[in-house]
Length: 116
Figure 1 (cartoon, helix red, strand yellow):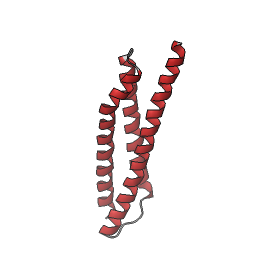
Figure 2 (cartoon, one colour):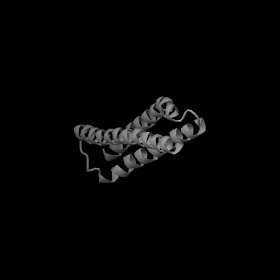
Figure 3 (cartoon, helix red, strand yellow):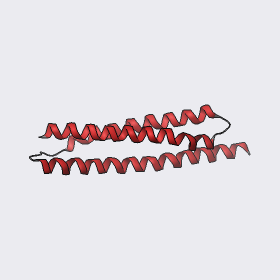
Figure 4 (cartoon, one colour):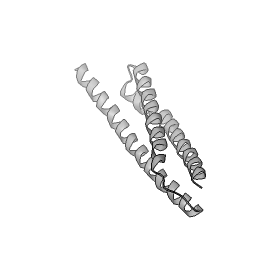
């Protein structure tokens, strides 16, 4: 039963991480480029860097969390284990999204000070 749980968890978590990452990358491009209208290459580079860091951190965290999975004996425990781990991954995703937006804001603020 543990192997089934591992497979389901890895498939679900990686699918969610990739879908959310692509969505943030595509929709975040407008946000980031609005901060750097004069340097589109810099804005695109930041957006790509944020996506790569997001993928590495979240997928690594999802795989790393497998080490603490307890012994699972029935389908109810499979659902409980997967849902608790997925909720943790979703909280991490939300936190990282906030940190990314705030970091881009701070970078923009820093460049605005240098221009003056």
